Image (cartoon, rainbow, N blue to C red; front, side, top):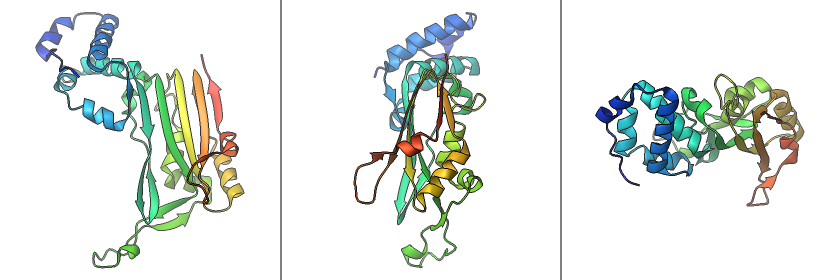
Length: 234
């Protein structure tokens, strides 16, 4: 990837141009610098280290927004939740862009995990205690209130395409829901239904998955897919 020669002093020349023209210039700049590609969290960290990308964003808030609008609208993005194994697997929400930039994205793939249990920090803080005693203690999620309080995937999914805080201008949303029901399956499905999950975009591709105890591969989970309302908008 070539380092950009654009510097803040040069950008000042363009400040008098209309925003529409500036945006087209920034799109051309972004295409030259990054090409059109699929960007996940690791790739974004790498891109963020390049001086050209950082220098032009520091020119002014107005220029930063134009650069980020071009960057987010031209590329495809993948956001996956994070899981950490420590006796039990603990899931964290995907690292999404700041709220102020989410309306710029056009094509995203999002992975979230819905489950009916959560880990609470151990009450044993003695560093000399056996590791298994200091692991999170697992608790069942039994209602919608607890689901939104303790399941990051549920919170992410509930506001994913919200007009004010989510991705409200998507052309294509590809969403993967990984469902993990450790207790009564029907109770868990009823809880997901009561949560009222809904997503919308011009085109929505939805798939839900489960991993049976006897299989190393995830299988499609149509019962969960049916619980998520999908709306296509023009």
